[in-house]
Image: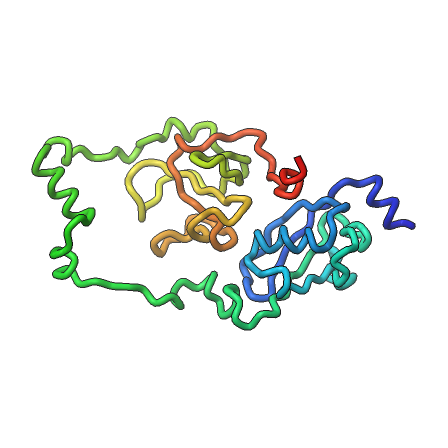
Length: 242
């Protein structure tokens, strides 16, 4: 009876998510208490990459004590009486899962393709050939350098922790970094942790860590692509019902 009353009186709950294979994965995600356990697993799949059929989910309270296993896919989340600050722990049961073996966290495990300078120089249509052609056609334009303060003025209203929307694509997230990025082009950059896995990294770019976020949720973009303001996290299940 208490569980039913909770569902009626409280629409949603903010839970921390952890994963058996991705140790750096611990976002806070808001769930509707009326979502079925199956819908919760669908949302978790979009966050961490573990398929619904290979996923086991455990609920822990804010002291670390296990409350229950979310085994009944038809039950609403509110049936298990979660509260803000509780934790959902995702266990990936698939030994061949994309999340296993540290592949989403340790890029050193990925075999990298390398080409010799001599072979690269022989290729047509490369960026190097394009720059050489551009320099030959317009030497003065090629010599123009980007200032170290490029777009600094656009960063005056962008702060770490701000919610934001990034174009193109209206991708939403939170600001995690503002400043110069020594491994990228001169000028100012903004680091964003997307709400969904729409990024390219986990906050580390070319060997330098600018911020921390879950794998494939991070991006470094120019300030003119970022709008800060009231951009709450979208709930894909609510959008589907419209």
